[in-house]
Image (cartoon, rainbow, N blue to C red; front, side, top):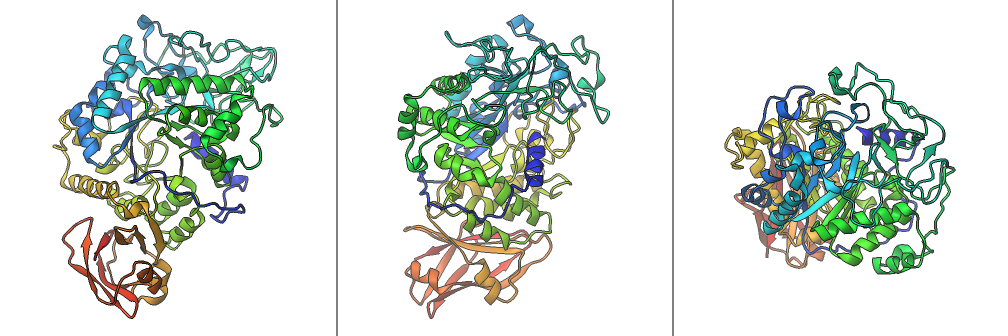
Length: 623
């Protein structure tokens, strides 16, 4: 929800633009040998078998999943889907409405908590984990440690969130390591700003909760002794999205407070900037640069948090709303992380294309969301009004950073594909997923339940359907059918759901084994559109290759129409592939039963293609 408001703001300000960049583009080579596939799972929802789904239901009424639900069997099935990394979303202890006072945890105020289960992006204690996720809350860290070990045993890496831009209004570290003070504990609250204050303040002013709108009431109007339209905070702090009002708007991120990174209220920087040319230097040079500099206190706090979790066994991080934090901080943090673990997987949520290259080259991010360019383009095609012509244009504009732009069709912020507000049918994802997973060398991400067509139709309480709720206790029906009372065997799936998951499994497992998908790319779409009869803007084609593997990929996004045509492989590609004027057998990698051949004559290749609605082929040339 908050991301969509932010993106809308960028559009209004005219920041979003075409993929043509007014900067020098430097080609970046892939750092991985094979594709990575990230499985984002909302941890508290994964193992929940309760299907009551009462709006605003309590944890007792609607249930909750636990770390322990990720059994060896469950993790084996996730791995077999073609997954290399698991992003356990919502692990850090965040504000929620449940009584854990017996474990030394203070109760949270519903007036500054969204939903009943709480937003995972209003972190209350960075050095601990959500007590809801533990069978025994007093041993919640031990239970998470065991989950990390099980995930590693299943030969997958572990990613968790770090939310750097804001924390819960009631941040309260109960388990800080020795020598670590809480956020704000040493702030001079008489000042709006100081470089070493962790927060911004509105001196001598009381915080007021928002005026509730659109019939909203905390907990759906249920009585709670803390739900009194009051929250004690004096002086008031700036809100997480930057609002400087003592009473933030209902649509502000009122449950959070903004972290101060040394940016003065007038927008100027109170720290050193990277010297000219540092975008071309490696993380070791960045680490050395910052090692002799004094940095704001908040920088050190988040460095300590990241290093703590690396020591705990975590393999990487997803950084929430990274573009709202200065790029110099990311240079500092990520170089510290990489010095400790050069293989750490660093993924950032950045939506402004003008910032992509800075956050990759200067900020030393491994990967950024490819939301504004590729995802939005594919979504328009899936909804019926976009043309595939735009995809090669997007890919060309991203050519220098394509490896760093993580591809996805779903995540916790976006509408479920099967939602009526998006595509309405999970099957419409098939050509889109083939393109998303094979277009570039970048990692691919899928969201739990995507592989079985989860529609996100539940009215959970806070917010509205189309997205599986991240704020309330809820069951996830299609996913629950796959879970099959924790047998994790798909035993209750419908035939169409089984077929969809099988499609994802075949596709993703191919991508993580393919050499060509870490190699070269060239579109053949416009050549065929100009020279091939019956080729249409609902069809997309391109080639991928390495020294050992040559692929021809063609997809039909049309939900009703079949296409039959003679796909042409331009002479330029045939030359690069060193193919002779002869016939080459083709192996179809998705289905394996398609008998096709590539005919090369006079230096040009031809393949007879018959595409059914929503069908894709990945042809491998057998030499």
